[in-house]
Amino acid sequence: MNHANRPVYLRLRDEICAAILDGLYPEGAMLPSVRAYAAQQGANPLTVAKAYQQFQDEGLVNVQRGIGMFVAPGAVTALRAREREAFIREEWPEIATRMQRLGITLRDVTENT
Image (cartoon, rainbow, N blue to C red; front, side):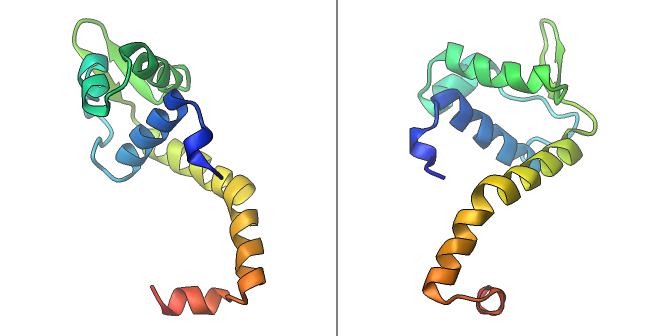
């Protein structure tokens, strides 16, 4: 999958998702404000707001008006399940095909990691 061709808000959403899964923003933690995250990423605040809105629509974050956005309870489990399914459906077939083409086995991969 070529991530460079994805819309910016989806790439930002993927980065936030990875940060949540990596524990940078654990459940209950406050996410950076839209403006702060936009400045950090060099993105338009409206683009960041669109990425955040998807998390809100999916129930993965809770908004406390005037305070901020917080990672919802259960968000890590839900995100991990969604990302695993997407990986198996979208990314793995391309990886498996390339491995087959190059003669790489799962054993080769697991022995070298």
